[in-house]
Amino acid sequence: MIDRLVAIMARLRDPDTGCAWDIAQGFESIAPYTIEEAYEVADAIARRDMPELKDELGDLLLQVVFHSRIAEEAGYFALPDVVAAVSDKMERRHPHIFGDGGTGGSAAWEQIKASERADKGSVGALDGVAIGLPALLRADKLQRRAARTGFDWPDANGPRAKIDEEIAEVESAASADAIEDEIGDLLFSVVNWARKLGVDPEAALRRANGKFERRFSAMEREAGPAFKGLTLAEMEASWQRVKRTED
Image (cartoon, rainbow, N blue to C red):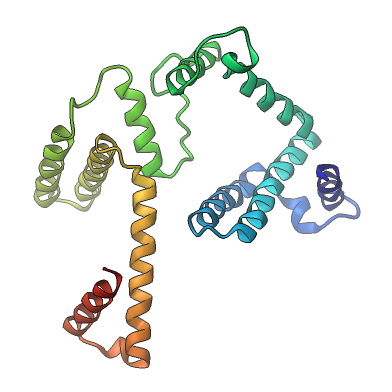
C-alpha cells in the first residue's frame, strides 16, 4: 500500500502534470505541517479516538513521503533509504534483541545514542537537542541531558526555591526585554521542578490547556449570548460553578 502513496506523491510533484501547490513546496515550507500533524496524532491519542488516530497517522505518514520525495528529486535520498536508516538504527539500539547480547532499557538506549552522536562529531552533552522542538519540550530535554553529567538539583526543593527567586526577578525587572528574559528563566525553572517531580511538562500543559478550553466553553454555554456582557465577578462565579461540576 505504501507504493500507492509514493506514486501519488510522485504524480503530485510532476513538474508538467502535477499540482502547482505540491510542486512549489520544499523542506522548509512543509516542516510546519509535519509538526502540526505530529501534534494532531498526539491529540487523537489523548482523546482515545481511534478512527481519528488512523487518519492522523496517515497524514503524518504523508509528510514523511512528501519530504522523501523532495529529497529524491534533489538527489539526496529516497524513501527506501529512510526506511533502511531507521531499521538499521532500531537494530543497532537494541543489541540485546538483534545483536550479540548486552542489556536493554533506557540507560543502554541513551548510551548508544551518545555513542552515535560522538561518531557524528557531537561531543557536548547538549549537542543534538533539536532547535525546532517546542520550547517547553526542548527545555525538558536540555535539562535531562545536563542532569546526566551531574549538573542537577539533588531533589525538587532546589528548583522550587529557584521559582520564587525568578518570580522576584520578574517583578523587579526594569524593561520589557528584562521582563521577557526573566519570564523565560521562570518558565525554565518550572520545567525543572516538573522534571524533578516526575511530571512531563509538555503533557501537563497540554492537559491544562484542554481543561481551560473545556471549562471556558461550559461557561459560554451556561450564559448563552449574554456571556460577553457578564462582569468579571459573574464570570468568576460561573467558572467556579463549572469547576464544581467536574469535581
